[in-house]
Structures are given as C-alpha cells and as structure tokens.
Length: 499
Ligand SMILES: Nc1ncnc2c1ncn2[C@@H]1O[C@H](COP(=O)(O)OP(=O)(O)O)[C@@H](O)[C@H]1O
Ligand SMILES: [Mg+2]
Image (cartoon, rainbow, N blue to C red; front, side):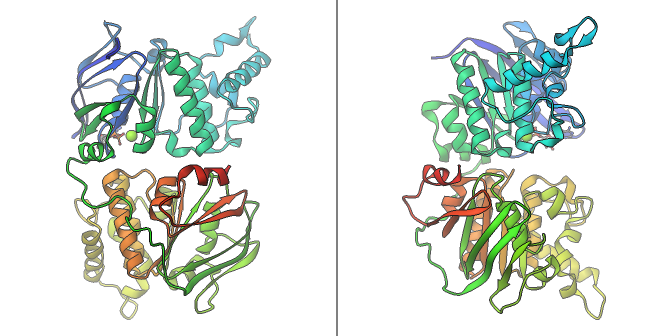
C-alpha cells in the first residue's frame, strides 16, 4: 500500500566545489510515512535533508510539495511550508534563554502593546515542553545551563512548535541517552498517528529498522534503493550501504568470555568530582571490559580518571607492577592508550597532519640521541596507515579533512604505534559508519587475542553486548551491576539497571 505523495524530489544534485554531494537523487515522500534515510558517512544524507528543509538550495533538480513547485528560500520559509528539521549540528543559540530558543523568530506571537510578554512566553514554553514529556527544564534559564542532550530536546520542542507536516531528524539520537531517545520515538509515534511524515536519519540500523516503515539507502550521493518494512534485512541493508558484502561477523561470534586471571589494571574506590562515587574495578589481561550507562552516569569521567587525565578526589589506579597512574604522561609511558569520546576536541590535533598525530605519543621511542629523522617518522606512520587502511591522499594532509571513521583510525594508530597494552576506549565507534565500525570490532577482537586489554565505555548497548567479556553498568556514579558475557544477555536487562 502506498500513501499519497506529499513531497516529490526529482533529480536533485548538489555540488560543494569539487565534491558532488548528491547526484540526481529522486525520491517520493509519502504522507504518514516514517522514512529512514541511511548510508555511510558522507553519503549525502545531511545534504539531502538540508535541501528539503531550506538550509541551502540544490545545484540542480526540482521539488514539489502537494503538486506545487517547492523552493524554500531558507529554513523559516520551509517551516512556513510545514517542513522542519533537527539538524545534525548543534542548533540552539548560546547566550539566550531556553524560551527564546524555542520561539526564535516567532517572538511576534507574544507581543502585546509593542512589548514581548515574557510571562506568557515562559508559560507557553513550559507547556510546549510538557507536551513531549520534558518536565525538568526551566524556560527562564539560560540555555547554556543545560547539557547537549537537553539542548537537543529543546531543539525538538522548537521544531515541533510550528506543527510540521514533515519532520526531519538528522542524527539526533546519537547525542541522546535512552531517555532522550524514548522522547524522540514517542514524538515520532504521535506524528504518525496524526498522519504526518517523518524523515529519520540515524547511524543505528537497528533503531531505524524498528522505528521506520520505509528505508531509503544512499551511497556516495547516489540513490541506491528503497526498502519497505517487510524487506528489512540487516545484512542486505548493510550490503546496500557499503556496496559489497561484509564478510565475517559484525561483532565477535564467540560467547566464551574467558580471559587471563592476571589483573593488569586496578581501580580502587575512585571518586571524581561529583560524577564518580566510589568505583572499584579490575581489568584482566586479554579482557574487553564494557562499561555502560546513561550519558551522565559518570562512565566518561571514570575513563578519564583511569588514564590519569583528571584528578581523583580519592582512590587510586594501579598497574600490575604496582605502578600508580597519576598523570596522562605516566599512563602513556606505561603503555596505556585512551580514545576520547570527543574525538575532534580531545583525541586529535585537527590542524596537524596524520603523521604528526600518529607519532605524538611515540616521540621518545622514535628519538635517536635527541633527534627524530623524518624518514623514521614516515615509516612509522605509513605502517599504521597500512595496518588500519586509513583512506587519505597523503600522510602529510591535515586530519581535519578526513571522514569520521578515518579520523578514529588515526586515533587508534597513535596508540597502536606506541604499542599500548591497555586501551581505554570511550565510545570508540561514535559517529562512524558501518564499514569502519566492523573494522574496529575486528581490530579490538584481534587485540584481545594478542593479550591486550580494553575498557570499552559505550552508549550503544548492542556493541556492549556484542563485544564485551564482561559488562559493568553504572548509575549515579556507582557500579550498579556486573554482567558476564552470554548469548542470552539482552538490552532490556541492561536498561533496567541503567535507569
Ligand atoms: N558545506 C559543505 N561544504 C563542502 N562539502 C560538504 C559540505 N557539506 C557536505 N559536504 C560534503 O558532501 C558529502 C556529503 O556529506 P553529508 O551530506 O554531510 O553526508 P552524510 O550526512 O551522509 O554523512 C561529503 O563528501 C561531505 O564532505
Ligand atoms: Mg550527516
């Protein structure tokens, strides 16, 4: 059964300089449909949704809304046509209040006798937030008081306020905890009941398969396929996205979960700020220890603490030889590697080359009598680039221009190059497409087999279940429960301990 077409996109192309971000893409968007837009990083998903929502015009092609030519001049124009989007990049304005963010450009609604009636505006903001179940945000507060997740939800409130017929969500759920996701899912269900249309972009295939009634696959800016719900098969979709069959398993396939007895890293009664409150753990040789929880459960701070990156209020981190970790420098010296959740801010120097980033932790090793030869640096870097199949023009190019997946490979390259024995991985596959993700999982498994040890902090439950020998679930700064690797472990069981 196909529904009435509300938006017809015909032969849309978009060029950014030499980049052909979209090539002759045609799709029909039907009323009442929940459509998932899927494709690897750089496949053109954001570009397509930005054109539909008036962020920029197409280079070529046409759109029709209800049979009429549709050429939005800007996002506000698109909104007036009933189309609004939660953009992938952050969309709230700092420096102003929550309510002002919600009603940006709509202040007229509250003007009485020439002045904005703030009281009315706050009350309206409160009610708009309440409608999607947000109770703990004060519309009078400055927006900066709130976390990324809360700001994203405020954006959702803003986009919904114009009562759109087509609602576009671009990679929003990646920034949200389960609670935030549930809010989005609820919004989507409600829009569906009202026969509205949703275009949903997410990296999470399972999520898309669950929520959407139809999937559109893009690859390299080209429309590849459209699949109806009954045609959703995970392997098939991945194959369409990547353009080849992904060989082998996605996650590891064994349920053994065994590792060495030997403890390589031990955290005792760790306190950090008000985020970690008395955590003790042991990491074994050859173990992948997963740590999960809501974004604010303290797990990210714990990861930093284990790497000596933030000060402990109390407690200690020791290695197998009794050596204590009190600074990052010392951690690196003792062959610890850390992959930060905030890759672009913390794990990489974006304005430096692939080479400079990769050699950084290993400079002392590469130095001969205080000097480092360019040749040895290049050999060292080339080795990692080959080992990790980093896609780049040359090793001297800036890291900034690489795709998310290749940037993350550079981060791994840093630590592999330094022959790290212990890896602390904070959301190692965040914002990475499926092809590279599969590669990362294989790499982690191979490192495990080599006797390396890993702590994998993750907000993605399937990856925790799929890769860990053991999972610790954190809640409110403490370890709530521990789970052994098992075939019967499922997301619901973990979520129960998280919330
Ligand atoms: N504003 C821009 N300027 C230059 N190139 C861009 C811009 N936006 C996107 N691109 C390029 O267009 C391609 C498609 O990107 P995008 O639509 O963001 O993909 P996706 O959302 O699927 O990850 C990529 O090669 C990207 O680098
Ligand atoms: Mg995108």
